[in-house]
Image: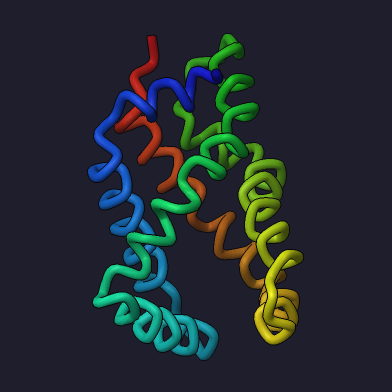
Length: 150
């Protein structure tokens, strides 16, 4: 088991999920322009699903997969000699980090039973990459908060 997965397993999962949802809320709120308005509108609708728990449920469902995806980057970060934060490390490796995270949703979209879901995801994939890259500093800080660096 990777260090990241092991340490996150020791953390309070509900707190990690709540902090992740807060990060997503903040990232969506920070978006501007027409695409930001559309993103905020869609996010507001999704947040109301499952009695207002849809985002929490999605984060819970994907957390282990995302942890696995980021584990190799976290291992590389821990092996380096430079004194930097994981947040900075993710920013300097933004392509690898965003590819790792989006590989999870790419696979889910490929297996989607609904052709509409699959085609919509394919259309939005390019925008998703930008949004994930924008969120990497926050992802790094979230991991730093929950995973002690021994």
